[in-house]
Image 1 (cartoon, rainbow, N blue to C red):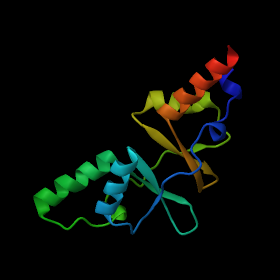
Image 2 (image 1 turned 180 degrees about the horizontal axis):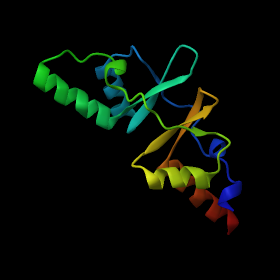
Image 3 (image 1 turned 120 degrees about the vertical axis):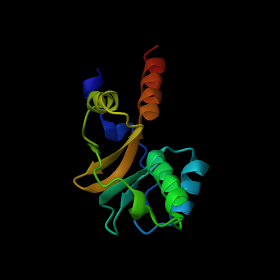
Length: 135
């Protein structure tokens, strides 16, 4: 059953994404305000170029305390080696990725273009909805 369910049907399409020149403090505030653990970073063509996680933000705080730097921009602290998943991938693929790594959410791409993101919680909500509908 899970193999026929696709990521694009469970992802959040109206997603938050930062640009590389977004002020880091503004990005952190936005993540906290929306209750997110991170967000993709895109270029002017909506291509995925990075990811800003809570962990990246903690590194920025530590860096600021050691070096007394100004906050900087998202590009100064984002992870550039980003794991993404295709919208046409199955939920099984997404679950395996979540189990194999400590990711809380994954950017969803079509080619290199960001189309959404999916979290562990999105998958669980979708499975719970399917279970209720099956009754």
